[in-house]
Image 1: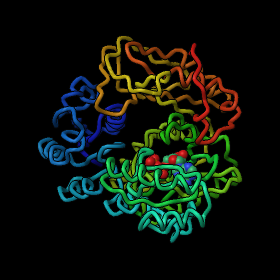
Image 2: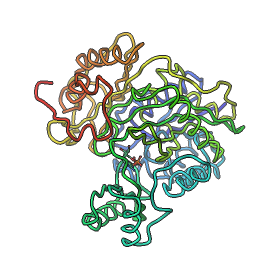
Image 3: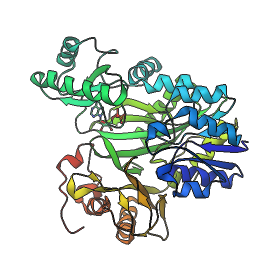
Length: 448
Ligand code: ADP
């Protein structure tokens, strides 16, 4: 087992990793920017190294500074968390060159899944169903128009380097193609420095259902059931749950097998997520694979009762998986609490938290790095807490979530708490009747 893990991240996930390391008797090193000097991950780690100013480019994304912190602290493994360098194959490679274990898959696996077109091609070869669309990169707008005509509108233009819902545009009619093409390319160029685009059929009213997988160094891959992440705003997840209300055991078995096949086709090592779109006829299509731990991993932890970070560290240390595929025996829901104003187009609302009370009680879990007196910096993502509830049934879980949301007090900044309170009381949500476009017509009412 590792002796000392450096956590190349911040916020709740850094704290989450430190907690598991402590339980595994592994020493921890936090890295932090000057904007994060008062963060809990800095206080809770055994050692902490300041790696630069607030800007991510000069701190959490700065590989030479992180490697210098590895050197001076003599860490023998690096946990990248999610975001920042978690899917940066160059970083994984440098860690390996330094003789430090990158807790995640190999650089080759990251590259294969990081580029969406290569990932799709790999899945086609492995026999996993993918969304119909272009074979590879579009040469120009005309080839895009031709394929769109063949597969039929609506279509979705996607950046091969895309992530976080960026570089994606839906096209309903041929007349809109050119303007959407230009917008998607500009956004992709600005966000990823790569404007390579492909086109695929836009699946109408789909569910986003993903499978958690884990693979060990001996080639064994298992799945740990699904998470339904269809409650999204601008292609970004806000609520996740397991089991999906849309799931049945036949579909779970088919999708679980496809997810394991996806992992095995690249000899996957570590925790990963295979994302699918599921249409109203329960046909499913591979969308992409994330080669890291995800924000919403606690949902799975709650239903299978295993610590996924611990499992991730164990496989990274070469310990084989002993279990088999897991089926959910409980229901869990996660609400992402963001420092955003839901009444003002979800505008970011950084600043000082003057008062903070998190809900407690049976089946309630809060993963957070904030506290009363903490200032949410404007430089990073706006998530300040994840509220996860677990109960025997979906109905009980929603009721518990309502109760927990009502107990949650955050003052000084605006948060997404009112949005979640209304959602939990929404009839369609309660009936499990929603798809990825659900929030497009959701109207936030005052009084929450
Ligand atoms: P990102 O990597 O930016 O998160 P994804 O490929 O995971 O992008 O897609 C994010 C979301 O966009 C999905 O959860 C879904 O809501 C929507 N989406 C992506 N592709 C399609 C498609 N072909 N049809 C319908 N919706 C799609």
